[in-house]
Image (cartoon, rainbow, N blue to C red; front, side):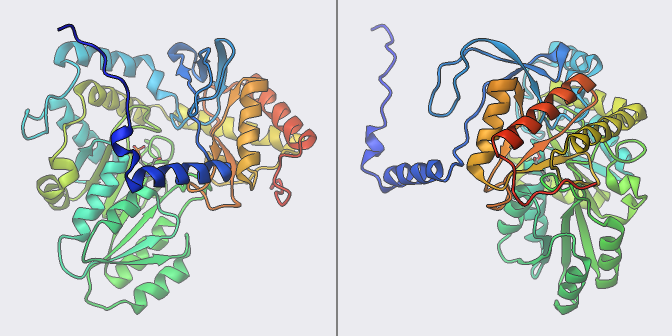
Length: 433
Ligand SMILES: Cc1ncc(COP(=O)(O)O)c(C=O)c1O
C-alpha cells in the first residue's frame, strides 16, 4: 500500500478540559492585545542587520507580507554581529565537515569532543575561574545549575533579585526543599535586611544578573559580593547580556568592575554577545565537577553540536582580542541616543547598551512595532507582559556595530512621526538626558 499523508486531526482531544482551556486562554490573550505573532525574517549573513522578509499570506500566528523585501532589524541580541563574522562561520563549516552535524549523544554516551573541552577551558580563562561547563543554552545553564545547587544540601535559602530572568526562577522554583527570599530589584539595603533576618547557619545563595536586559540597568556586583561575604552567602551571577560587551576582554560587568574573583559562579550565554548558541557556567573546579556529575539538565541531554561549539570558540577568542568591537557598539549606542534626543523621541536612559522606548500599553506597543515594519521596513519586537509588567510595555532597541547613521536617521524619523502623529507614545514617558 502506498503511504498516504494522514489527515491532520485534533479530534481525540476535543472533549478534554485542556482543549477548552486552551481555547479560552488564547481568546483572553488576544483580547488583551498580547497575542505574539512570529514575523518570518531571514537574516542576510553578508548584510546584517538586514534581513529578508519573504512574501507571506497571513496565518493566525504570522503577519502578511505582500512581497519579498529587505528589513533592518533593531532588536537582535547578536549584539556584536559575531554570528555572521567570517571567522565564526568558517569555524562552523570546518567543524561540520570534520565532525558531522550533531554530537551523537550526551557528553558521556558519545564521547566528549576536544572542541567542547577547549571551549570550557577558554570560558574559564575568560572569567578567571578554575573550570567551565557547557549547557544546551543559557536558559538550561541557569535552570539546571540553580536547581541542582539548591537541592544539594538541606536548608538552602536563595536570595533572588525580583527581576531575575525566567530561567533563574525556573531553577530556583524547581529546587524542592529550599526556600526563596525575593529582594527588591538592585536594592542592596533590602537584600541586607533580608540576609540579616535569615537563620545564621543556613546555606545561602544570592542569585542576580549584571545587565538586566529589559530595563537596561546594571547591578552593583561589588556591593552584592560584600554583603555575601558579610553574611556567609555564595554568589551566582548571570552575565548573559554582558559577556562579549563589557570588560577588557568581554568577560562581562564583573570583569569591567574588577570583581570577577569575588563572584562564586558566573553564568553566561554563547548566543548573544558571542553570536552563536549555548550556555555555560564557570566556577571553582569542585562546583563545576559537582554539577557535571549531578545536574540532570547537563547529564541527560545531547551535547551541543561540535560545529556550534567550534563557532562559539572562534567567536570568544576573537571577541577577547578585539576591543574595537566593544568601543564601536557603545559609540553606536551613544550616537543613536543623541539622535533620539535631538528629535525629542522619548527613551529611557540606561547605563548599558539597551535603549528602551516606553509605550505603556500592549496594543499601542504592537501597533507601533507593526507600523515600523509595514510602513518603514524596520523591525523591533514589542515587549509586552509577561516579559515586562503590564503598563510597562516598550520597544527595546539594540543598536549594534553595523547600524549606520543613515539607518539611525530613518528609525528616529519613523519613531518621531509615529509617536507624535499617531499618538502611540507613553503619555508619562520623558526623554532623559
Ligand atoms: C538574563 C537572561 N539569562 C538567561 C537567558 C537565556 O539565555 P539563552 O538565550 O542562551 O537560553 C536569557 C535570554 O534571553 C536572559 O535574558
